[in-house]
Image 1 (tube, rainbow, N blue to C red):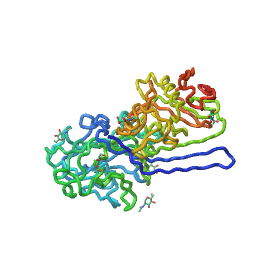
Image 2 (cartoon, rainbow, N blue to C red):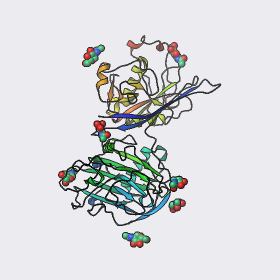
Image 3 (cartoon, helix red, strand yellow):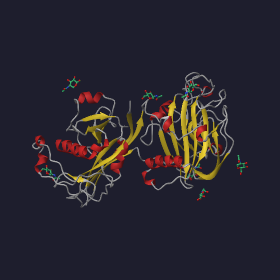
Image 4 (cartoon, helix red, strand yellow):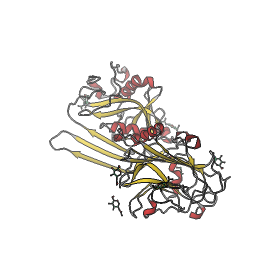
Length: 472
Ligand SMILES: *[C@@H]1O[C@H](CO)[C@@H](O)[C@H](O)[C@H]1NC(C)=O
Ligand SMILES: *[C@@H]1O[C@H](CO)[C@@H](O)[C@H](O)[C@H]1NC(C)=O
Ligand SMILES: *[C@@H]1O[C@H](CO)[C@@H](O)[C@H](O)[C@H]1NC(C)=O
Ligand SMILES: *[C@@H]1O[C@H](CO)[C@@H](O)[C@H](O)[C@H]1NC(C)=O
Ligand SMILES: *[C@@H]1O[C@H](CO)[C@@H](O)[C@H](O)[C@H]1NC(C)=O
Ligand SMILES: *[C@@H]1O[C@H](CO)[C@@H](O)[C@H](O)[C@H]1NC(C)=O
Ligand SMILES: *[C@@H]1O[C@H](CO)[C@@H](O)[C@H](O)[C@H]1NC(C)=O
């Protein structure tokens, strides 16, 4: 099951004097929470293991690799590094090998300048590394690895589409257990940390597949279950007794659920920019609702206007995207996912969407309705009232499902709660002026007729509609 926890919600309303313009800004920071099934599949990790050119880290308890000289300078927390250590205990360190098995969970000194995908008491001393359980690592400049790193970074930081990594280092903790190592114990963790740089900027990408334990026995963990005590730390330490960035779940019992969390909307994936003194998190988890009401503005190219007297514009985006990603794409040009606030749009938009998306082999598209803020009720992100409804089944039935984002059926126009992680095409809605809609948005050459049966349904139907801007 999937649900979102909202950690911050604020509304800003502002009126600009002398202009008939209002602007509403709603920022919703959503943190994706909790699904047992939503994880990064091992097949979706950066390729790893001996067959992919990795080296095994020798078996051990609290041990580390030899110092690994790097072929480039790696910037981290404002310092350039020419070497690193891979540590059994779930960390990459830059100033010294780390043998500490209980994570510090507090500011640390020089030796501990480190990246911790899962700092906890991993123990491999009783096992010979095999493809079924091992810690492996490699430096990579392979184009496939660099492209994969780039894809993750650009997804997390859309402004960095020009970033081209030239180097990466991939460390994988595959199917490892906790102190004391028992080779037959099946409670195991699988995670991967990739660091990458172009010499100037650098990033860390964490993938979590299976996280079944958080704590070794010597960190007061349960001797069989590997939980309790001081749970694993996830984050970045500068090693200056001060600067550090940790995940919210770091050092908490809830770190066991990290493979269903994300800071980029993809369960089990975390991306951070790590070269400068301040570790930078992606903005992808922000949903920004923007509304403007300028006068008599026409819709820009690549969008569609439904009524002559209104400057509401719609754009139709075929790229299959998860809910938050779709909303962010709309936000990027001052739009929101579409809200179907009356029968007119409720019928018309799905019909246009059906014409434009029918080649995609999907049956639905995203609207901006969800229940991520208040789990008990669906709302529109842009704050419009939720009076008009077109649920597939009746509303009380819809409220019982576990899905939190509202999709619309292309053929029939009815709504239903959909898994927010599904990838669907989407429609954005915005108010005219000065917006540049991406050229990938689809427009129609001909406008379909509105179905007769709704022609008297809404007073808003009185005005004839036309398209002001298809392709200029
Ligand atoms: C790494 O570099 C250091 C300093 O240049 C050197 O002393 C050491 O031998 C190198 N290690 C390896 C494994 O090449
Ligand atoms: C790190 O190396 C880069 C590239 O060589 C250089 O531009 C930068 O000034 C260095 N940073 C520090 C803190 O030395
Ligand atoms: C992980 O290790 C356990 C214990 O050795 C083993 O039973 C299991 O099959 C391994 N899992 C994978 C996916 O290799
Ligand atoms: C992990 O997530 C599950 C499912 O949401 C939840 O029931 C459980 O309490 C969470 N565990 C911890 C330790 O937070
Ligand atoms: C933390 O980082 C900032 C920015 O580089 C730096 O000014 C400050 O001195 C650091 N704090 C400590 C305690 O080193
Ligand atoms: C809605 O569905 C529920 C559960 O199936 C049913 O009990 C209820 O009577 C239905 N309400 C309406 C208005 O159809
Ligand atoms: C457009 O026309 C409809 C129908 O007359 C009306 O209800 C609506 O308020 C008008 N919109 C604007 C922005 O004037």
